[in-house]
Image (cartoon, rainbow, N blue to C red; front, side, top):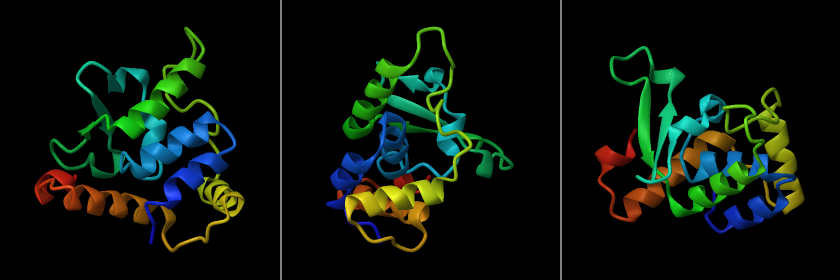
Length: 146
């Protein structure tokens, strides 16, 4: 069970911008564990405030190979910082570093550094907590359950 007040502590404990961006994508964007690895800078539509997420898990279903999510302000800020650090003419991927890392153990280290307890199902619970946040904010369930 993820607590919203933990989010700033987790971001502050991240060792670099890549981890901050990953955390924002998981918690604010509601992405599944490996979905950030498929994101390229072409997926970000800065003008329309949208992010196209490629969904390998649901791609076997017709029309479910990708989804569009809002570029929430907290997410946009971390993506902008990641973009500033990206090498011009470098990799098209948003996440260049840590692509082969064990995210579970890396994220558990960040929680330790933040002084926070681990919770069951780390990444699934961040995604579910985001769904709950959006429902509480008044978004319809059919929009939130992507």
